[in-house]
Length: 261
Image (cartoon, rainbow, N blue to C red; front, side, top):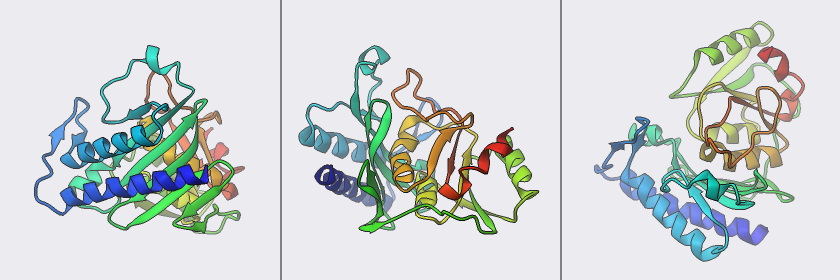
């Protein structure tokens, strides 16, 4: 598993270099997909590189990428293990020249992420984790916060803040002093994993490839990723849209449920 994790870290970095080539140019070639989300040359270049390298590294493991052609559930439902990839998570951050976009690569087994790499190209930082190995920022072992301290640091999306999230934050503010951290992409989950924040309620739409790699990192760091009714966040569903979910440090494990009642 350690060798595989090292290989995936190298693939994510190589994809990041492809992204930076576009980021540093004036030609993003931005298009709008059917859901009105942006698609750039960087997304496609990173996708092509990752898929090519994964097919060489693990030819027997199928790949599902955000930029793949649609794969039917009739085919996917037979998969017990597959790669789940977001070649460029945070395309809006990318287009707006904010540095908080990532490359996300996860290995899913029996509907759960067992390995994850999140790479930040501009910052040249790699978060990684695998079952049994722990979670890392570069080569340093990371853990979530084990004690609550105020102000309670809560993450919110830079691009998507739902009315449900605002209501939840108002409830928490009645009990705690709160500092809101606005971050983009999978970096929000990684901030929980390395102790920079305590709680991230995502009461808005995300897709499976947005969360899988970072979920592996949070869980191996001692944190929790769960639906709002405390069920596991699972993968390779017929509909690849995630339900609402929360991410919590080990310090928040017993605290968060009361705010969702």
